[in-house]
Length: 283
Ligand SMILES: C[S@@+](CC[C@H](N)C(=O)[O-])C[C@H]1O[C@@H](n2cnc3c(N)ncnc32)[C@H](O)[C@@H]1O
Image 1 (cartoon, rainbow, N blue to C red):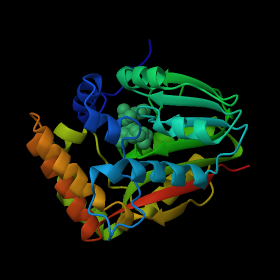
Image 2 (cartoon, rainbow, N blue to C red; image 1 turned 135 degrees about the vertical axis):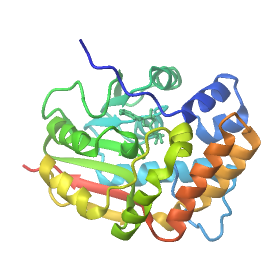
Image 3 (tube, protein in one colour; image 1 turned 45 degrees about the vertical axis):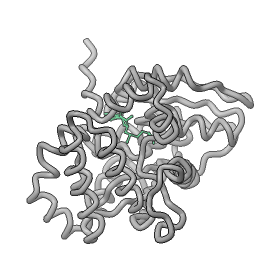
Image 4 (cartoon, rainbow, N blue to C red; image 1 turned 30 degrees about the vertical axis):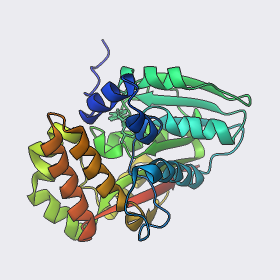
């Protein structure tokens, strides 16, 4: 019997509800990508809704560039959300064999509904856990994971699965919250965000510092990963998320606002970094 999948993060309930109702604000902001984004001019941009979708597309492209994805590749997008990364690849490349994986059948249904392959590209949407991928060994040229690894039950298990399904010299590219070592110790004291984080964002593990990440990647069969700290380019998102939570005022709005505030403060004091990570599977 197959193992039960982990529960999807709670914030997707509100998102799916608003998207199903055709809410124009939710559709413009979160209909494609659901992540922190990369704000090109963070000092000049106060975090407006109009620019959020632009920032989100920019982060997606930067992660894809770290692979880098090229025409004709076989690409796995893990934790694929509503399929925004796959939609972006579809618009920019041809003859891709793409697979989107998610634990949430509702998100996959929306991805399938809103996506039309072009330019010889193909796609499969697969309901599965990132830590138990239902694919053969050495199947993919690139594995992408945009802002989802901190939700997974185990980074070690995910990295081992990513290495297994990648071809030799295949590339892993992801974005993740990576604390400094001092930040990790401080965040641990705060119980990783506590119940407010669990009630709003679900499972969030932001306790894997660079040294541990390197060790997990090595143990999984990757070369030394590269980390690009893009924290300053994510900061306007906090205002945008705060404003959105205040307007939406759902049952979890307070927990959501407090949990977001913790991430923001941790990022602003330098405990937590937002990083784009790239690693090559050993030959
Ligand atoms: C912040 S969203 C990012 C979505 C997408 N990558 C994007 O950039 O728009 C996190 C995603 O990870 C998915 N997820 C969480 N845990 C997962 C797991 N164990 N296996 C696969 N996907 C998972 C969630 O359902 C959600 O789609």
